[in-house]
Image (cartoon, rainbow, N blue to C red):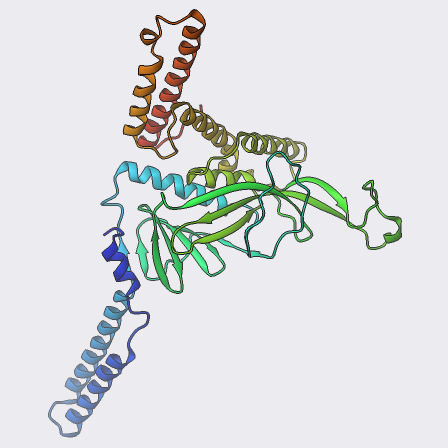
Length: 386
């Protein structure tokens, strides 16, 4: 059984607790019956014990039956095809990467995005609490696939193969991946709490400083250097009032999560995140004892993943298709562009225009080949980085 509207209705309407009255009635009735049989001598002693044992088994059976109705089992190993598993694995790995970050916070409100082209100064972090990201319990659901989730405040979003489920007030609401909107940007913050190991520290400032940035001599004893860190911010929104504002210490993990769920990341952000990873690795190589959350195998893949996603984003723009476009949409866009820029179509034009068209056709062919190769890699269960 997979998630359907009927299944979701069963989950939301499931009993929340075991009914005690039927159990008490069955247990009490058995005791009374056994006592009467023993007092009036209808049955011998060992037969009364058999009646008591049967009553106990009946109560246990009733209890297990009620417990079974409190959850719905979902099975994917039998029904989910290879393409579905490939897509689900991509989402799962993105959430797993997010969970590996040193810190993930839930912000009380949306953080203002810096204006494009303007230098952003550091700001104190807004009101925040730690969010939970990982293999979270799914009340009322038992699935034979790993279900990762994000719990931020009173909202939890679970990622299933068919789509996401928003859990709030002990009720699930369906959110398709197409309806899930994720935005990413970076912001500089003063960090006066515990500094995560994977935080990108861009500078340090004095708590009390002069206009030129030097320490104010009037505060010699309680003046400390405060790190300025660059965190990744994720705005996750969707139907049924879904609204999460997350701060992530590992910007690479945040970028990968956002891209997996359809967000377009500016190339500058991708380059900066990749450069930050290489700088982190150089620092770790100089000081092997330096702790780093990027030392795992998944962390080493982040630059390759980001570079691959950047190339795919460029290829999609070349063909004029959105992220998540179907193979039919991609092929149709390619054929339309090929009919326009094919050498046979521009043979009568001026040499300069023919040269431009040929260059454009090369870009279209390369973009189409890259996207097609990515589709084959997902279908085979692998991921190319080249």
